[in-house]
Image 1 (cartoon, rainbow, N blue to C red):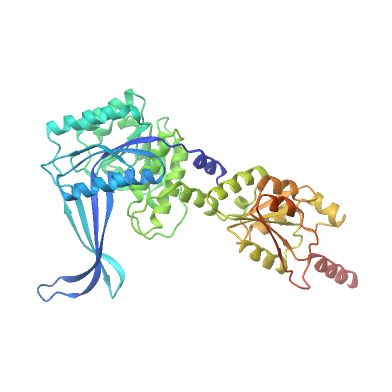
Image 2 (tube, rainbow, N blue to C red):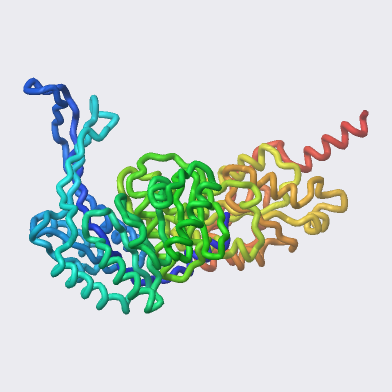
Length: 493
């Protein structure tokens, strides 16, 4: 678990971003692929429902709003109902559309996907129909578009260019915007178009090509990490960038910097349900972080998480900061990452509470972990969203249990508890009671076993509205019994 990244997400500001690019409306027609038509050898789709989603630069803007940053969108729509619907959807999402212009000579770009389910299951795309124009803006409209963008620059912390090669990101638009933003110290992040002339992006701050786009730009096949580093360094040098983010799908992001260094940021293995929108989510996350002044390394780490969460969803879904924070808190189950110092744990508990999670706390010596402990901890974990187990230090156990205890050292006890699936955090404390730790963490629920006559911390927890719960013990199972049994057998041998 990255405590640093948790702090980064919690401290992330609310910058204003200017997104420039091709606005796309995605329509999905869902239905049952019942049979082959009698009129022709084609699938007959009985329509069930239809939905609309934002695509292209519009989707990037929507995802930035999902990350709780401000967005102004600059793009072109046609004079048609699709353009009106796209404009309305962006406005409803809280996007400033004052730099969206109407071009009567072109239709709004629309992609219609027909999704068929065979025997009411296993949906697959049957056909995609695109309605678009790829011709460049007229000189008159290009002038107006550039002027509108230049007026907007001063109020923004970063510029994102989402180029889908539909004729909006013309060479003159790109050159003018990049130069003007650079003169004002505003970073420019580019997601290149499929038919891009990469020299148009010279002087941008950074670029986010995937494997194929990187090959088209550099001529280098990107099969390995070293390939990605070589291509990234070439992009940085030839395009005069500060850094290049080469996205490698399941392998993560290869970062190359202007000083010649490169680093791979691998992503965690996830269940992939739909890759649609993952690239836009990566661009949005990097853009928001870039606008807020995060390091390129942290941009890669957060982009991996945001993109990973996106592929776990069906369809295009805007990922929130809360979801990223939740993934950071619960995504990794490595034992050493569940073992925390008190100050680190306090920050994690605060983050969990901000997500609305119910924090459960219990404590004990947990010397010689046994079935009674496991059952007790599983029952405690079921009372909330996060279970913290506080463990008496070796010195504390000796004071409480005598000089022959503990049998197992505090580090090993903490490791064994952290290895349990039901335990989210394990922390060692040196006092005889956990009262000081309770005051620092202020959990929602304090849990103790049924053998405890006096529950230390009850008054404190109840004073701020927390709960105190007593769980029943597993009969005839205890560390003391086990230790006594071992000693009796040793003595009898």
